[in-house]
Length: 123
Image 1 (cartoon, rainbow, N blue to C red):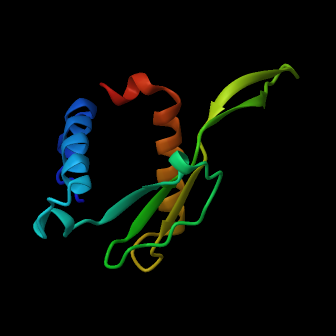
Image 2: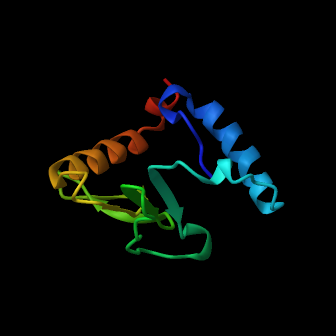
């Protein structure tokens, strides 16, 4: 299903809309219009335990974000110690005819920075 105008919606509105359209999809009640017109896909293997994967772009879309299962891992700190941190593996595939590699790298870096501090998502 396609969620439209995400750039104009807050995290709570997106969550409500995603819940509603997901329920409709599980009940096989989506219209053709609700499944067309996307430009970016988010695919998750986390629910089945995947640790990493390479998502394939759904033409005519331009990019796809793969989300794997999060887990606690030790992260090296500058003082030489390790601390536990919840890590979420992300994989971004994009059409190089449309998206420059540097822009793709900036996007995934920006996304990671936003996800590392969830307070920024609700502002």
